[in-house]
Amino acid sequence: MIAEHGVAGASHRVIARAADVPLGSTTYHFRTLDDLLAAAFSHHAQVIADALEKRMRAAADREAALESLAQHLARDLLAPERALVLAVELYLAAARRPELRTVTESWMLRSRRALERHFDPVTARELDALVEGLVLHQALSTDPLSAAQVRHALRRITR
Image (cartoon, rainbow, N blue to C red; front, side, top):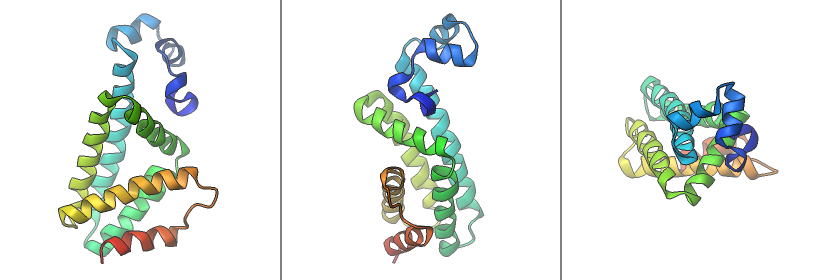
């Protein structure tokens, strides 16, 4: 529902209707809408972080890790439009609701730890920030970067 209607369009009633459960079920399990949003965004962040961790574990070296990171961006964060919209909705919601920053902070920490398998902590943080910026850029641009440009940007940070 968040991907379809945005955070502004999400309510206990809308979510209960979409899940085909009584309204009382959502309000029983999630006292506030922010609790429900935090759970939804935490799940999304966990799925994406799991995917990056799997890709980084499979990468044999730094070059393979960069290629895996480019694939993560293209296939896990950008290609499924739902994932892209959820990421942007989370960024915006966390900017407005500090209680949701625990979700983004946890996601960023997991991403950096996964990247630290192949890069020093400073570079891992810079790569993570670049990926987040690329997600926003690709989502909002009428002329998004090509896959080659994304790979070039990732490599520049690791020189």
